[in-house]
Amino acid sequence: MPVQVVYITAALLFFGVLPLPPLFFEFLNIVAFGTFGWGAYTNFGKTTPLLPLTYGVLAILFNPIMEINLPREFWIGIYPAAAILLLATKKSIAE
Image (cartoon, rainbow, N blue to C red):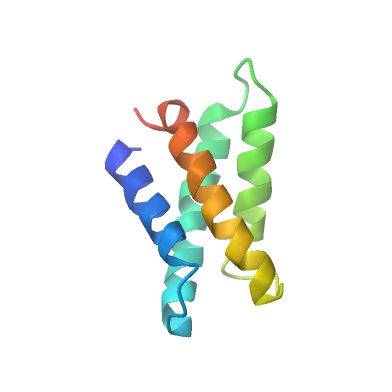
């Protein structure tokens, strides 16, 4: 995955703390699901087993098909935490 996709996903996750229309959050779920799913796939079988597990949990959390309905206060904390994790581990996803 190109590193630009990681940066775009992180930027979208940072924008997730703003009060935006519901269509943005649907788009955010699709993009984040794809990015974290790809991260879990590419890191599976590598030396650190915690990273693909974390990416897998985040992919399930951002699943656009079976959405997890959490209060807005939880999502406001999850979005920047996921973005920071994504930026901190971008070398493990980017090719």
